[in-house]
Length: 129
Image (tube, rainbow, N blue to C red; front, side):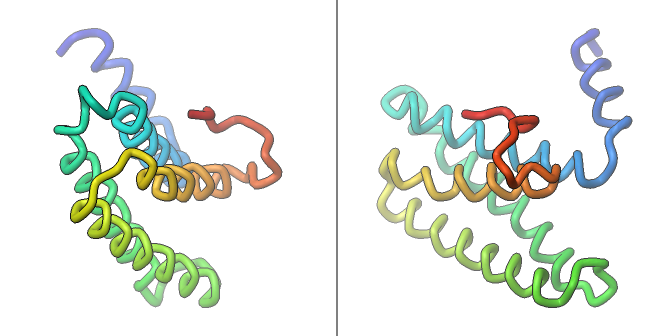
């Protein structure tokens, strides 16, 4: 294992659950944005990036489906609806891939990440893409 891998593992192990979730959303948004910005060269990576995003949203949806979740029922319902939208949009993108169609998934992930970190007022602790 090289030094950068050890640093990354140490950094992640020191994060709380909210930071980890936010980081995962940012990472998938960044991957989708990179593909969008480099469409001609990176289009072949689209399905893998969409699959990672779908898997992340599957975990989020699973957590919101759990009755022991600490979030209020209305919030859980809203996040589940958003997850269903993400799944539907993902299938539409797979069927008809266009770089601009990735914008909505990128924006959803970044906005949820900001919300998780308490930055819904737009103050940037979350990197902009």
